[in-house]
Amino acid sequence: MRALKGVFPIAVSVGLILAVTAVLWQINSAAAGSYHLVYIYLFPVALIAALYSGRLALLGAAIALVCADYFLQKPLYILGNDNSLEYGDLFVFALLAVTAIKFIRVLARPRTSLAAKSRSA
Image (cartoon, rainbow, N blue to C red; front, side):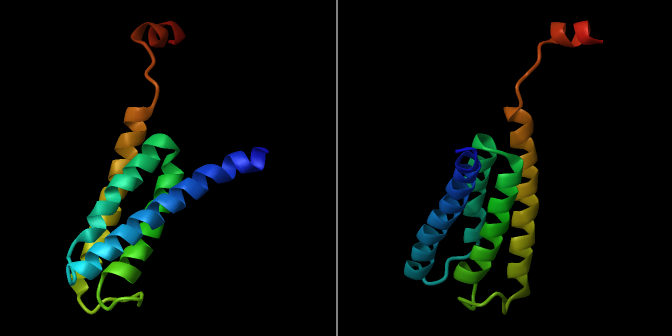
């Protein structure tokens, strides 16, 4: 039972990233190559960081990078890009995701009261 308790957050995180990928892939197909869709992955990564842990959010960001490169950026279905600016988008997304994860983890940390800090010192 304990093993299932640890697997559930991983499954939810990966499933959320894959669901967002499916929606973005549909948008990319219908809009004939929308640009900068990779930044939409910041929302599910932030949600994962708030609900579960920073490590799972980093895993989600890594999966989002691979999915964005493979499914959203041209040429499609190849882990490579014709345009070097698209690598810049992936790099900036990774930088923003790591920063957002850190901020959310700090904000989600339980606060200790000032009186408790002074008693422990």
